[in-house]
Length: 351
Ligand code: SAM
Ligand code: SF4
Image (cartoon, rainbow, N blue to C red; front, side, top):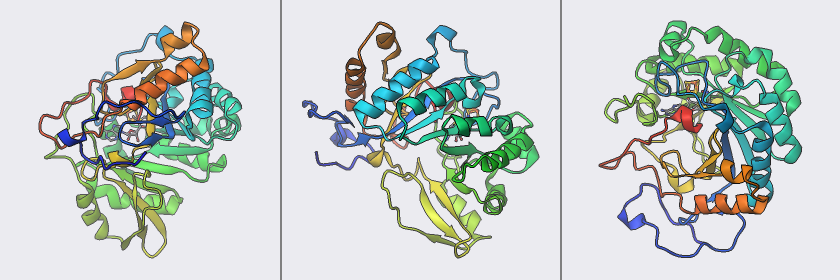
């Protein structure tokens, strides 16, 4: 199938009804193939980042609706062996809030021994589990850290836990996770501290990636007019660092990367709003309740948990997953007139 450009959706991008080609992969009507699986495993979190969670936290998911480690591993097996998924990333909510995270990783490792397993975490409490997570089979880690200023961290996350995050990052490095990436969401409050954060990351030898804030906050306070753009960030960083843009090797990798000070390190910028990468999106998502979500911004979900519990075969689960991805929308349309904020916030989908 020939891929078509789907950067920002418009009426011209509306899918024409036609049959899905007979391929096992997770293809969609716009020619994209999903290879990167994000699995949310909880709605709970130890922080309350203002761009994500409400102050009171998300409404709790009933225990009976949450996928068990065995169910997660079964669906991961379907994704890897029948649908062509090549990377699994656990997210949430906060994955470390699940006491059985090691078991989840161990069971997934055993069904998919050669597939990279990653997690996105706020690193609170990671110091106590970094080693056991690596022993269970964790390969890669992304840590969310928006500022290294203690007061601003406490304000932004509504919790005074910066020390625990920094200790967690060091523990992960000591446990052998060599490719740790730091994710920082761009916010007006932290913009002028972004150069300090980059400096800290260069010293700690972790790669920093800034992400434009998307309208996925539970409190719906996001506004296009007040969000910090990649361009504004570059202006701030250039006051302190020499930045040279690199060529993007993998088109589905969302970050644009810049070499800092002649090779001291690299900084990435994910301009998810102002330079949408929807046309190259290769993600498929599973929520903590076991529904497939084809796009962060689409409220359409396909329930695999009920099918699984009612005895569906692996091929039946794979078919339902394929159908869910086939109708993936063209793009997020954040900049379009009439954009509608999705019902679930980032913490309830899994970023
Ligand atoms: N709790 C973990 C963490 O913070 O890394 C994993 C879940 S969190 C929802 C996953 C990622 O989504 C984090 O890197 C976070 O910064 C990002 N995120 C949350 N809300 C966002 C928003 N409104 N726009 C852009 N990124 C967001
Ligand atoms: Fe929790 Fe992560 Fe959302 Fe922050 S971004 S509130 S750490 S789920």
